[in-house]
Image (tube, rainbow, N blue to C red; front, top):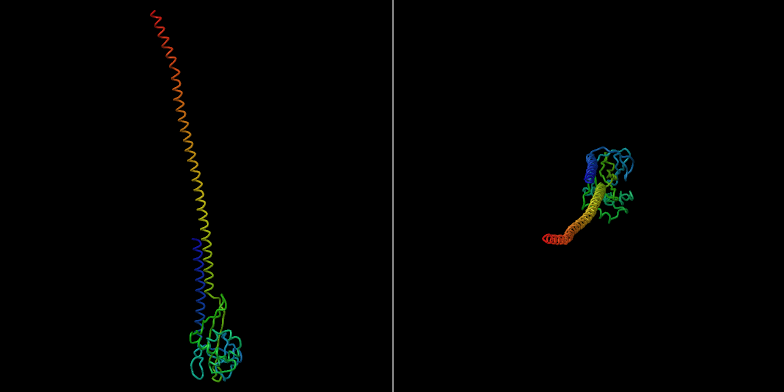
Length: 289
Protein backbone atom coordinates (compact mmCIF):
# COMPACT_ATOMS: atom_id res chain seq x y z
CA UNK A 1 0.00 0.00 0.00
CA UNK A 2 2.86 2.38 0.87
CA UNK A 3 4.63 1.71 -2.42
CA UNK A 4 1.37 2.26 -4.29
CA UNK A 5 0.84 5.59 -2.56
CA UNK A 6 4.43 6.61 -3.32
CA UNK A 7 4.00 5.74 -7.00
CA UNK A 8 0.69 7.60 -7.13
CA UNK A 9 2.25 10.60 -5.41
CA UNK A 10 5.21 10.58 -7.83
CA UNK A 11 2.86 10.32 -10.80
CA UNK A 12 0.66 13.16 -9.51
CA UNK A 13 3.72 15.33 -8.92
CA UNK A 14 5.02 14.50 -12.38
CA UNK A 15 1.65 15.24 -13.98
CA UNK A 16 1.55 18.55 -12.15
CA UNK A 17 5.06 19.43 -13.35
CA UNK A 18 4.26 18.39 -16.91
CA UNK A 19 1.00 20.32 -16.86
CA UNK A 20 2.82 23.42 -15.62
CA UNK A 21 5.52 23.04 -18.27
CA UNK A 22 3.00 22.48 -21.03
CA UNK A 23 0.94 25.42 -19.83
CA UNK A 24 4.07 27.58 -19.86
CA UNK A 25 4.90 26.42 -23.39
CA UNK A 26 1.31 27.04 -24.51
CA UNK A 27 1.37 30.52 -23.04
CA UNK A 28 4.71 31.13 -24.73
CA UNK A 29 3.41 29.92 -28.09
CA UNK A 30 0.21 31.89 -27.64
CA UNK A 31 2.17 35.03 -26.79
CA UNK A 32 4.32 34.55 -29.92
CA UNK A 33 1.24 34.14 -32.08
CA UNK A 34 -0.27 37.26 -30.56
CA UNK A 35 2.79 39.28 -31.57
CA UNK A 36 1.51 39.84 -35.12
CA UNK A 37 1.59 43.60 -35.75
CA UNK A 38 4.21 44.20 -33.04
CA UNK A 39 7.00 46.72 -33.70
CA UNK A 40 10.54 45.32 -33.97
CA UNK A 41 13.87 47.08 -34.64
CA UNK A 42 17.10 45.86 -36.24
CA UNK A 43 20.08 45.52 -33.90
CA UNK A 44 22.62 45.79 -36.72
CA UNK A 45 23.16 46.57 -40.38
CA UNK A 46 23.01 43.87 -43.03
CA UNK A 47 20.84 41.46 -44.95
CA UNK A 48 21.78 37.91 -43.88
CA UNK A 49 21.34 36.49 -40.39
CA UNK A 50 21.18 39.87 -38.65
CA UNK A 51 19.68 40.18 -35.17
CA UNK A 52 16.54 41.99 -34.08
CA UNK A 53 15.47 43.28 -30.69
CA UNK A 54 12.78 40.60 -30.23
CA UNK A 55 15.42 37.83 -30.04
CA UNK A 56 15.04 36.64 -33.63
CA UNK A 57 17.62 36.56 -36.42
CA UNK A 58 16.62 37.17 -40.03
CA UNK A 59 17.51 36.78 -43.69
CA UNK A 60 16.50 39.12 -46.50
CA UNK A 61 13.58 37.98 -48.69
CA UNK A 62 13.69 40.81 -51.28
CA UNK A 63 16.73 40.37 -53.47
CA UNK A 64 18.06 43.71 -54.78
CA UNK A 65 16.34 45.98 -52.20
CA UNK A 66 18.26 48.02 -49.64
CA UNK A 67 19.55 46.04 -46.67
CA UNK A 68 18.56 46.92 -43.14
CA UNK A 69 20.23 49.64 -41.15
CA UNK A 70 20.59 49.43 -37.41
CA UNK A 71 17.47 50.91 -35.80
CA UNK A 72 15.19 50.33 -38.81
CA UNK A 73 11.65 49.43 -37.76
CA UNK A 74 9.69 46.40 -38.88
CA UNK A 75 6.25 44.96 -38.20
CA UNK A 76 5.79 41.30 -37.21
CA UNK A 77 3.78 39.24 -39.74
CA UNK A 78 3.11 35.50 -40.04
CA UNK A 79 5.22 33.47 -42.47
CA UNK A 80 2.57 33.46 -45.20
CA UNK A 81 3.77 36.98 -45.83
CA UNK A 82 6.95 35.53 -47.40
CA UNK A 83 6.07 35.16 -51.10
CA UNK A 84 7.77 34.49 -54.40
CA UNK A 85 7.92 37.90 -56.11
CA UNK A 86 7.15 36.43 -59.55
CA UNK A 87 4.36 33.96 -58.74
CA UNK A 88 2.98 35.75 -55.70
CA UNK A 89 2.63 32.39 -53.91
CA UNK A 90 3.63 32.02 -50.29
CA UNK A 91 6.92 30.18 -49.73
CA UNK A 92 6.81 30.43 -45.93
CA UNK A 93 6.40 26.68 -45.43
CA UNK A 94 9.34 25.94 -47.75
CA UNK A 95 11.58 28.28 -45.73
CA UNK A 96 10.43 26.76 -42.42
CA UNK A 97 11.00 23.26 -43.83
CA UNK A 98 14.53 24.28 -44.80
CA UNK A 99 15.38 25.42 -41.26
CA UNK A 100 13.73 22.51 -39.43
CA UNK A 101 14.44 19.52 -41.69
CA UNK A 102 17.82 20.73 -42.96
CA UNK A 103 18.97 22.66 -39.92
CA UNK A 104 22.60 21.53 -40.28
CA UNK A 105 22.75 23.00 -43.78
CA UNK A 106 20.96 26.20 -42.73
CA UNK A 107 23.52 27.03 -40.01
CA UNK A 108 26.59 25.83 -41.89
CA UNK A 109 27.04 28.84 -44.18
CA UNK A 110 24.95 32.00 -43.82
CA UNK A 111 25.75 33.13 -47.36
CA UNK A 112 24.61 29.78 -48.77
CA UNK A 113 21.48 29.97 -46.62
CA UNK A 114 20.75 33.48 -47.92
CA UNK A 115 21.06 32.30 -51.53
CA UNK A 116 18.72 29.35 -50.93
CA UNK A 117 16.15 31.72 -49.36
CA UNK A 118 16.45 34.07 -52.35
CA UNK A 119 15.90 31.10 -54.65
CA UNK A 120 12.46 30.55 -53.10
CA UNK A 121 11.51 34.24 -52.86
CA UNK A 122 13.18 35.62 -56.00
CA UNK A 123 14.13 32.59 -58.17
CA UNK A 124 17.78 33.32 -57.47
CA UNK A 125 20.23 30.71 -58.82
CA UNK A 126 23.72 31.26 -57.49
CA UNK A 127 26.44 28.61 -57.46
CA UNK A 128 25.72 27.89 -53.79
CA UNK A 129 22.15 26.82 -54.59
CA UNK A 130 21.99 22.99 -54.72
CA UNK A 131 19.15 21.92 -57.08
CA UNK A 132 18.85 18.48 -55.46
CA UNK A 133 18.46 20.07 -52.01
CA UNK A 134 15.86 22.52 -53.38
CA UNK A 135 13.78 19.62 -54.71
CA UNK A 136 14.03 17.80 -51.37
CA UNK A 137 12.85 20.90 -49.51
CA UNK A 138 9.92 21.39 -51.91
CA UNK A 139 8.87 17.75 -51.59
CA UNK A 140 9.12 17.80 -47.78
CA UNK A 141 7.13 21.04 -47.58
CA UNK A 142 4.27 19.43 -49.50
CA UNK A 143 4.20 16.49 -47.07
CA UNK A 144 4.15 18.50 -43.87
CA UNK A 145 2.99 21.96 -42.84
CA UNK A 146 5.27 23.38 -40.17
CA UNK A 147 3.68 25.82 -37.69
CA UNK A 148 5.08 29.29 -37.18
CA UNK A 149 5.67 28.48 -33.51
CA UNK A 150 6.51 25.26 -31.63
CA UNK A 151 8.05 23.02 -34.30
CA UNK A 152 10.70 20.73 -32.76
CA UNK A 153 13.82 18.84 -33.80
CA UNK A 154 15.35 16.20 -31.53
CA UNK A 155 19.04 16.67 -30.67
CA UNK A 156 19.51 13.70 -28.32
CA UNK A 157 17.47 11.58 -25.94
CA UNK A 158 16.83 14.43 -23.50
CA UNK A 159 17.05 17.68 -25.51
CA UNK A 160 15.23 19.13 -28.48
CA UNK A 161 15.23 22.39 -30.43
CA UNK A 162 12.07 24.50 -30.60
CA UNK A 163 11.61 26.71 -33.66
CA UNK A 164 9.73 30.01 -33.94
CA UNK A 165 9.33 31.85 -37.24
CA UNK A 166 8.02 35.24 -38.38
CA UNK A 167 8.29 37.69 -41.26
CA UNK A 168 9.44 41.23 -40.51
CA UNK A 169 7.85 43.77 -42.84
CA UNK A 170 9.99 46.85 -43.36
CA UNK A 171 8.44 50.26 -42.72
CA UNK A 172 10.44 51.57 -45.68
CA UNK A 173 9.24 50.17 -49.00
CA UNK A 174 12.74 50.52 -50.47
CA UNK A 175 14.23 48.28 -47.80
CA UNK A 176 14.17 44.52 -47.59
CA UNK A 177 11.71 42.42 -45.59
CA UNK A 178 13.15 39.60 -43.51
CA UNK A 179 12.35 35.97 -42.83
CA UNK A 180 13.23 35.66 -39.14
CA UNK A 181 13.73 32.63 -36.92
CA UNK A 182 14.45 31.87 -33.28
CA UNK A 183 15.70 28.54 -31.92
CA UNK A 184 15.59 27.56 -28.26
CA UNK A 185 16.48 24.37 -26.42
CA UNK A 186 14.34 22.46 -23.96
CA UNK A 187 14.24 19.10 -22.24
CA UNK A 188 12.08 16.47 -23.85
CA UNK A 189 9.07 16.18 -21.53
CA UNK A 190 8.10 12.71 -22.77
CA UNK A 191 11.55 11.32 -21.89
CA UNK A 192 11.42 12.87 -18.41
CA UNK A 193 7.92 11.45 -17.88
CA UNK A 194 8.91 7.94 -19.01
CA UNK A 195 12.07 7.94 -16.87
CA UNK A 196 10.20 9.16 -13.80
CA UNK A 197 7.41 6.63 -14.27
CA UNK A 198 10.00 3.92 -14.93
CA UNK A 199 11.82 4.83 -11.71
CA UNK A 200 8.52 4.87 -9.85
CA UNK A 201 7.68 1.47 -11.36
CA UNK A 202 11.12 0.12 -10.45
CA UNK A 203 10.71 1.39 -6.89
CA UNK A 204 7.25 -0.14 -6.75
CA UNK A 205 8.57 -3.43 -8.13
CA UNK A 206 11.44 -3.34 -5.63
CA UNK A 207 9.00 -2.74 -2.79
CA UNK A 208 6.78 -5.52 -4.11
CA UNK A 209 9.79 -7.83 -4.39
CA UNK A 210 10.78 -6.97 -0.84
CA UNK A 211 7.21 -7.49 0.29
CA UNK A 212 6.92 -10.76 -1.64
CA UNK A 213 10.28 -11.86 -0.25
CA UNK A 214 9.10 -11.07 3.25
CA UNK A 215 5.83 -12.92 2.64
CA UNK A 216 7.70 -15.86 1.13
CA UNK A 217 10.15 -15.89 4.03
CA UNK A 218 7.27 -15.70 6.45
CA UNK A 219 5.50 -18.52 4.63
CA UNK A 220 8.70 -20.57 4.68
CA UNK A 221 9.11 -19.90 8.37
CA UNK A 222 5.49 -20.83 9.00
CA UNK A 223 5.86 -23.95 6.89
CA UNK A 224 9.07 -24.83 8.71
CA UNK A 225 7.42 -24.21 12.08
CA UNK A 226 4.38 -26.18 11.01
CA UNK A 227 6.58 -29.06 9.91
CA UNK A 228 8.60 -28.77 13.09
CA UNK A 229 5.46 -28.56 15.20
CA UNK A 230 3.97 -31.40 13.25
CA UNK A 231 7.11 -33.45 13.79
CA UNK A 232 7.20 -32.54 17.45
CA UNK A 233 3.50 -33.31 17.78
CA UNK A 234 4.09 -36.58 15.96
CA UNK A 235 6.96 -37.40 18.30
CA UNK A 236 4.84 -36.41 21.28
CA UNK A 237 1.93 -38.48 20.04
CA UNK A 238 4.23 -41.42 19.38
CA UNK A 239 5.79 -40.95 22.79
CA UNK A 240 2.36 -40.74 24.38
CA UNK A 241 1.21 -43.83 22.52
CA UNK A 242 4.39 -45.60 23.57
CA UNK A 243 3.97 -44.44 27.16
CA UNK A 244 0.30 -45.42 27.08
CA UNK A 245 1.28 -48.78 25.64
CA UNK A 246 3.95 -49.24 28.26
CA UNK A 247 1.45 -48.16 30.91
CA UNK A 248 -1.11 -50.61 29.60
CA UNK A 249 1.51 -53.36 29.51
CA UNK A 250 2.55 -52.47 33.04
CA UNK A 251 -1.05 -52.53 34.25
CA UNK A 252 -1.63 -55.83 32.47
CA UNK A 253 1.52 -57.24 34.03
CA UNK A 254 0.43 -55.99 37.45
CA UNK A 255 -2.99 -57.53 36.93
CA UNK A 256 -1.46 -60.84 35.88
CA UNK A 257 0.95 -60.74 38.79
CA UNK A 258 -1.94 -60.19 41.21
CA UNK A 259 -3.90 -63.06 39.68
CA UNK A 260 -0.81 -65.20 39.74
CA UNK A 261 -0.20 -64.38 43.37
CA UNK A 262 -3.80 -65.12 44.14
CA UNK A 263 -3.59 -68.37 42.27
CA UNK A 264 -0.34 -69.36 44.01
CA UNK A 265 -1.72 -68.44 47.44
CA UNK A 266 -4.78 -70.62 46.86
CA UNK A 267 -2.66 -73.69 46.22
CA UNK A 268 -0.73 -73.01 49.45
CA UNK A 269 -3.94 -73.14 51.60
CA UNK A 270 -5.23 -76.55 50.32
CA UNK A 271 -2.59 -78.81 51.96
CA UNK A 272 -3.13 -77.09 55.28
CA UNK A 273 -6.88 -77.59 55.03
CA UNK A 274 -6.38 -81.26 54.13
CA UNK A 275 -4.03 -81.74 57.06
CA UNK A 276 -6.46 -79.98 59.33
CA UNK A 277 -9.36 -82.15 58.15
CA UNK A 278 -7.24 -85.26 58.58
CA UNK A 279 -6.36 -84.18 62.09
CA UNK A 280 -10.05 -83.58 62.89
CA UNK A 281 -11.00 -87.02 61.57
CA UNK A 282 -8.33 -88.65 63.72
CA UNK A 283 -9.42 -86.63 66.68
CA UNK A 284 -13.04 -87.65 66.21
CA UNK A 285 -12.07 -91.30 65.84
CA UNK A 286 -10.02 -91.27 69.01
CA UNK A 287 -12.81 -89.51 70.78
CA UNK A 288 -15.27 -92.32 69.94
CA UNK A 289 -12.81 -94.89 71.08
